Image 1 (tube, one colour):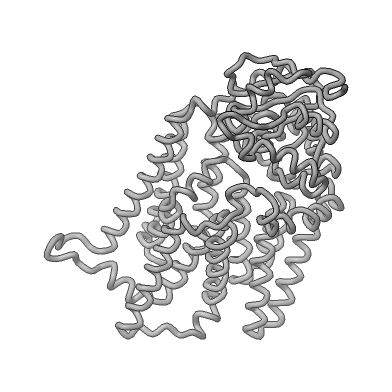
Image 2 (image 1 turned 180 degrees about the vertical axis):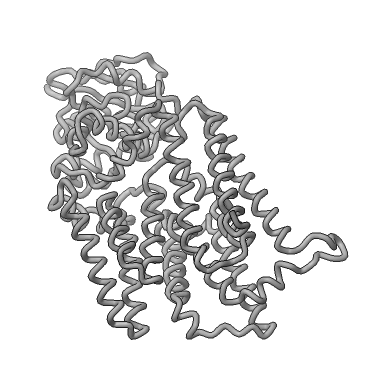
Length: 513
């Protein structure tokens, strides 16, 4: 095996192994996030067949009224991991996702035939940002949409039409996030037209259409899927001012140090190359798609800064791809730069060696810090905290104002139906009044040390929208409401006070005079 292949391969193997090993330090899952609901759905799919819809778990919100699974192939992808205990299965899934992202980056960078240490350094950039790495170990399926986006863009740039069709077909079946590889592929069509390569543009458009249409046609719920994309997915991100969206849907300006530093370093290197007489021809940059890549990176960067910080999922990989493209254009200058001796301080150490060592140290630091954080908070994420839900009879309806804990609740008892979950905005789409009542849980009145909420009136109004048999609330956001709920007539506490998750039975006629 040549050094050009061996060093990146060993780097991917080492980083994936280090990640998995660090995650094993804790017996708890890395989070109670969406990965938990996906693996629970996968377990149901394994036992009952893959044609499942989310209304089996929900009786309120958009997905309760429109039976479908917008994450169809994503849920299927978790099925092999249900052979393991869920916490271990999710860690394996997260590790596989990280390895897939690194392999995808290597795949699209390899044709440039850059020196192996450069490729290794570029792969290590995946680990320089704590927040990005933290999202990767959540074991959510979005990392695969990033992989599909990179492969779709690469397919257009290299005119690989079969690859483009297959990637978009799989991405469309995988989840709603297929819109990102679709947008990148369509931007590639615009680039082809700018090159006046009409034939390639028509071929690309045909492949894109075939891939997406085939994906929709093969989806178990094609019509509902398309309606969901239009009515919900393409609408909610633009309603941050009127809805309480998750933190990932707000600007990432305060956490932009790493991408800004990478972008700044790239600009400095290009400036240095120009100063030293290494001219970069704009036409050459445009012909190989570097200008397209720069434009896409700029769009992702500004969207990340000023709109949605979850754009980091796409921004950092695009930035790494852009770095590789630019380095190829200034390869002679970059070789001179990376072989410069650090004399007189360290005459035997070259600049490239120091950079590689620094990035390796940064990657290990990122992995280590994440592992330490997960280890010290492991007790807070024990799945046994949801054990009280298992006592709720199958078929019951459960009122759960804390929508973000739905994955844990669903895992604790997948045989009941919950009022809300996955995303609180799914409720806002169908019933704005019900959404506002659920938001009381997070209001200042509820989070005061001595909450000032009329719990009887609040629960009564919620029951008008969500006729329920049980109420569940955590000792997190709901901790200041719990003392009031314990003395609310018509509610019977079924768990011990102080439990992480508390369950109340809602008596018949609650709220009646």
